[in-house]
Image (cartoon, rainbow, N blue to C red; front, top):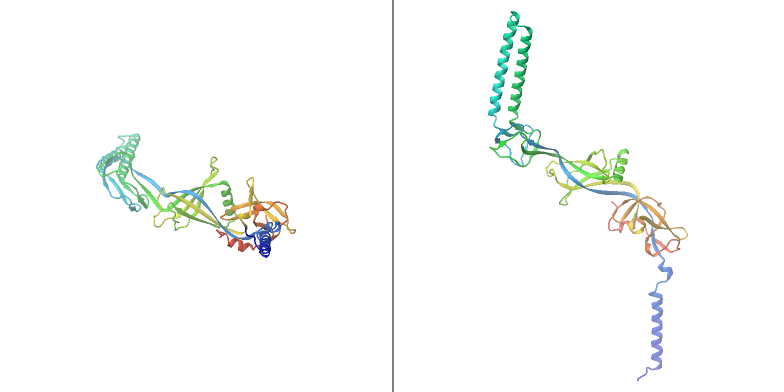
Length: 366
């Protein structure tokens, strides 16, 4: 076996020794470097929060059109999907029978009138008594009432639109024998849509507290089933009087103008309630950790010691928390390395500006 010359052996040993020194000094961080963490401060700024609720969309007025009189459906003057105006004729039921009944009742009223006039003349001559006159007056009143009823029946053979509306499906066709109460179609007033959604009790109380302060900071919008945002903004128009004890919610109603009649009765979507919170304290979510469903942060004191502190989260947004209590603006909180430190430890740290921290988040506070 060939042996290396002595100078070569010495050179190899020197190289191995130097490489070991470099690995120890460069590749293996010291304990002090392991404990160096990044801290930042809470920051106060305006934040827009968005709450989403599943909703059902209804027409402001949605009615069933039913026949009040029976008979043959003589004429249909509308088509499905048509926009009709108040007073437009929708259906005509064959009026012949009702016209004949009106003529008969009118004739009976005329006979009763003649009898009354005759009895009044006889009363002056002493032939009849006042009772006879009163009986003829009652007969006339009854006959006139029956004639008016017949006139109303005839009027109901013509079915008109009670308001501007959109016509739904036609349930019957011309020539059909219609009975009293037969469903003919439905009418929808879609100029303004009523959108109903359920709000949890806690969020209801937050909304009412804002309303009590007379601060209209809510923006109501509607997202359709396709994911598109409805162009018109809504407003809260009503809140039901009772809570649902099973779900812990109360029903809200938001009204949306619908000038293009894009929305129809029975649609679904999501209501977004956006509110601008003024000058609230926020921190990155990654600076927190959870213990028994409570949120905590590590706060660094003036001596560099870590202290675990509970915080109360008011709102949770993407990547940030809005803090209700537990922190002050000057507190230094651990941003990175939360899982590597322990309560009571003394660490070295470097500070990072909170504005820079929020700017680097994936989602920003608006």
